[in-house]
Length: 563
Image 1 (cartoon, rainbow, N blue to C red):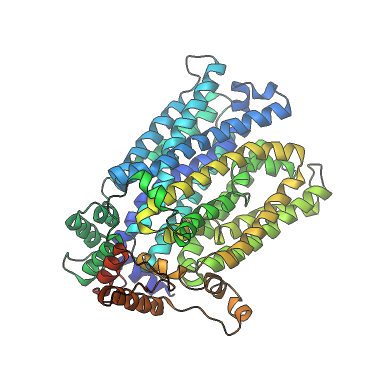
Image 2: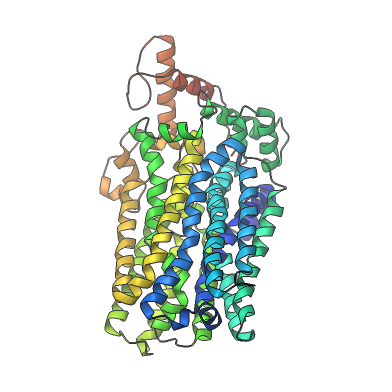
């Protein structure tokens, strides 16, 4: 894609891009905290203030794990509750509430210990990180749903993928703030308080930006507010209310929600198991986020200074500088992948190649650590440092943001809030697990830590090859057709080298399945037959008939502004 076309596209979709920018500012908060706390823990001033420098290595590792992971505990509860808030109050009000909770938690973190004993301050630090984590978990669960429901399909992957850009930006900025205070601020309380105070900036900006964004048109349709939904669509598409792109998208959304309106929080969870295909579509997002955590990315994000120190970079300042470079590499690669790769390569290819490559880098680091157990610099040390940077490159290529994109696209529209809250809850639960066990693993099994993450990455790549469909360019309302017919054939067909493995076997295209589905439903309506277009299954429900009749009335137009 040439630069001129990129610029024209940016102008054409500027409202959608700004919506994605505003929403993903919340993920800057998430990324900031991920990068912030590891560096703060490494500062001698923090360790001295809370007495960590007087503890044994094992006790210090346990305390570090607790300080890091308590935010993930709050994030888990925020993510799990997000579905209820998003369904009852809407996406936008819930996101604004998450910003307020995060800011309050950050303010409390920045003043812990003032006017009290350090032991009391440590307890308050635990509470404030848990409280702020609730806000981060809420926004982390809702932003992918909100963006995927609002973005035009031509740039949906790019808009949803900008989440990882925001995480990378927050990582990078916090890494360099940590390095800056270690280099320029004298030993004392202010040295470790400044990075915490600075995280208020993205939280406040997130709240302000979201004030000017529309509500999700899909949530508005679900609540029967069709005129408001049309206004949201018109703003996003930069069109009139009567334009074809707005009316066709509105018709598609209404068709998808026919017979499914106003599902309660509990009903959404119950309907996840209404049939095997729905259960599979609801499970894949959580599987993706579960596997993402076992890539080892947050082990490096949270404990990068300690990891670089174990490779021979001894001083605090030098290890924080190396961590800052890691943040720059991840951010730059994420931007490049988002701009030029995600829509051209597709979801499966980035996940498959990224998983294999990042696994090889982890295995290299593990082999180096096994051969050189002492933290001293040898020629191979530099290759291992490069391997950490390359790991960041390959993680950003695939597993950095593609799980969020693919998960939000695969989730059934009427169950998306509940499905994505579970997926986000899975992220937070295993981020908590990784944050707890990583310092212990590094202390006890050392090089085995990297081998565990390396093997997990290879397993992730293999599962993606056989276990998920390719959703690039498929409208959200049509993703369900990717789960009709022979699933294994379709999933492998979309994978790198899959067509060679399958030989002459091919799955039906989405358009062929839609035509067969519409024809099957019309027979059921007009002739009393119970045959449908859903893989030959019997017992067509009235909801399915209404939905397909509405779809059949929609004229298909290849308009890039259709969401």
